[in-house]
Amino acid sequence: MSALINIGYLVASVLFILGLKGLTHPRTAVRGNLLGAVGMLLAVLLTLTNQRIISYEWIILGLIIGGAIGAALAIKIEMTSMPELVAVFNGFGGIASVLVAGAALLENTLTAEVPVMQLTVAIAVSGLIGAVTFWGSLVAFGKLKGLIGDNAILFSGQQIINAILAVTVLALSCWVVVDPANGMAYWLLVGVASALGVLLVIPVGGADMPVVVALLNSYSGLAAAATGFVLSNNVLIITGSLVGASGLILTQIMCKAMNRSLTNVLFGVMAPVGDGGPSADDVYGGKVKSASPEEVALLFDAARRVSIIPGYGMAVSQAQHPVATLAALLESRGITVEYGVHPVAGRMPGHMNVLLAEADVPYEALRDMDETNLDIDQVDVALVIGANDVVNPMARTDPSSPIAGMPIIDVDKAKTVVIIKRSLSPGFAGIPNPLFALDNSLMLFGDGKKMVLDIIAALKEA
Amino acid sequence: MEMFIMGLTIFALAIFVGFEIITKIPPTLHTPLMSGSNAISGITVVGAVLSSGSQDTMTTTILGVLAVIFATINVVGGFMVTNRMLAMFKKKS
Image (tube, each protein chain N blue to C red):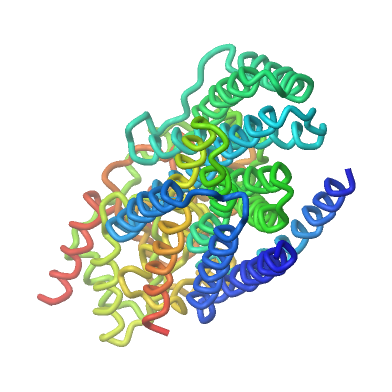
């Protein structure tokens, strides 16, 4: 019987791998996700046949409550709030690992055998990663939702406190391993790891969130893998490491897209604004031209090719539907419209793509940064909506700027650039953007959604 | 110990499988990949079911049930929201 269950777990693992593979292409992605869900159902059903289970009512109650909450969240959530939801789901995976490892430790002390060291090590690791993931995700959720300041929260001595916590966590882990019968050690470990989770995410600022969300995704996988070692269950180990690897790759992609190292993002060290850096007055003084929606509409009328560059501001003002309407209107007049999406635009990997997909933009029209830069000089009008640092040419031109070397979308090379923005206030990097003062740039000051609607109205009138 | 080494072997190999699969993913699908892989990491539900069903003590049962709830939110919510997102990507193609 147990061999049969293990073969079933193997089938589930294969389904997970095929499912993830499916997620790598839009055509196969829905099926991939379904394969994953089938694998999960199979794994749960097999587990229910385990002879250790003597009562089902609590399990069923838990499954019903969890399933109902999960389904309600998934159905109700607005696409613009997707980063928060993913963050909180990551955290729930983490806390589940903490609880399971805690229960396993307790069960083991009951049997009065001295548990082998591999088991206690796995329990400590499970509790540690799980607690960091849970609390880190909650802080990320709070930041994304705007409950806690979106900016990096830094205080003096932060690194020292983190170092002390890290050492304490290691010491407590050793205590759990050496003296597993002492239940208190484990929960102390979980408590200190929780504080560490909070402090690790607190210093990370808004625009760096994509890295953190991806990293927590990886942690939630590693926590599951550690729990797999606790239970000597291969399906958990395989699945956890798959997710851990996938989150790690996303983290790496995000870091690369910002030209920053992971430690740099995690410890909130943004390169300081050099003293020699130009002030906002130097950059903008008298050179910024502002336009009206009507003037922008005239520009579009004369254009043959338009590229739309969305940023976090598009999500904030919920402008994705008007943007898609504008694109459709332009296309109906024979103008080519495409979208240039920067990898870290928004608050999570792929954030812009999801919003545009929600607004029915075909994914063929979404071009990544490199593709966009290839022929941006042939674009008549580049429309930047709610993006700032990712289109700042200083990344290319000023080696002393904090964003020096960060890959950007070179909209300044388009024939005309229209930037929809509320004001000239700096983006996350805290530096002025010379793009706004270029001869071929026009600022359209106002709320993203309202401005796009105004352009549409002006186009229809003309 | 043998069991542990076996687990470690599987862990290392699965990491490589993960790297191989995910490096090919287009940026468009990064969000669904995260929510989808996130749902899969809710596999901890397997361990949670065992803890809550074996009824060793009241405490392990409570820990187990709480874990079942959290992991199931993760699993059900994750798969459903991924499906919802992917449906939006699909309808035009």
